[in-house]
Image (cartoon, rainbow, N blue to C red; front, side, top):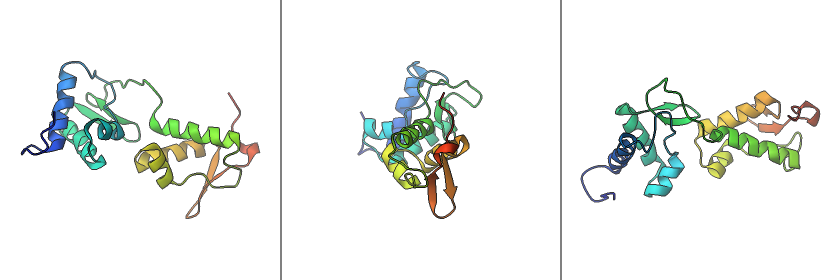
Length: 160
């Protein structure tokens, strides 16, 4: 139970909880640390507090962060477990489904970064990585200062 009135900052208390879970083997080497959104829900904290938890655990050298993928138990180089797709992959897959269903038409804008961040509860870098993935695959193109648009259907990738 968190002591919200005491002298120890909340982020330190939560970092202690995760550190204890790591020591007990509840979070194994390579396992992802719960996302900022999951920490918010579990502990009723702000996103900035969740970020401070991850930073505290990095400072203790019990986790490491891979930009756009998440924070993982162990030091850099420990093989990461992938139980599910990375958040940017899930976002990209969602947009591809919407394109295929016709919700996003060719030469029309997809969701902005801010909308993607809000809809999926992710950081800006994750939203950007999703759009970059779509761009590399040929689903979308970006016009600087205007937005990201669905590519012409003949430019879409082949279905697997």
